[in-house]
Length: 212
Image (cartoon, rainbow, N blue to C red; front, top):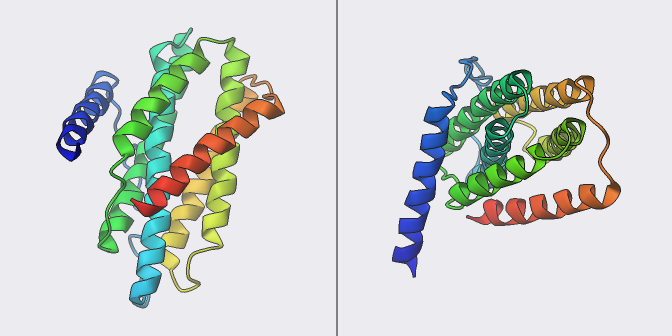
């Protein structure tokens, strides 16, 4: 069973790489927020805790990138496609920052990331098939929920972990900006039942990614 999962996992990972190549998704090259920050060494229990939190954030960025690529695949206008791919590029910045921080802590990213990515591409495509304003409303609500989630994690990290703090604060700022961009572009508010479904599915990803 594990061998079979490995083959599937590799196949989905190849899909991720292919979509990134097709859309030329690259990070915007912004500097790592924690680059010049010096802090005291965390104790092992703190390292483990922060690693688990950052693994969740890394998976969230994998999903966000998939969501934007899915939207871009079926974008109705070049303007909307460009906006989605620009956001995907910034999400790749976040992805790299989370990955670097996890490596600094000697941790690992989630083995389920290919699944989160592929599922998010599908969700993005489905959302993009609806009216433009509804699709943008989905983006706005996603970014709002991510920003709220990041705020929770900011409050959960050790007080002395200035590196992780700087990363999460910058990510939160970008997510708020993405939501505002969608709002300015004409996003309509989603119904509460859909918002709740989004929160429920996100909670599954968070629960799993925190552990593996």
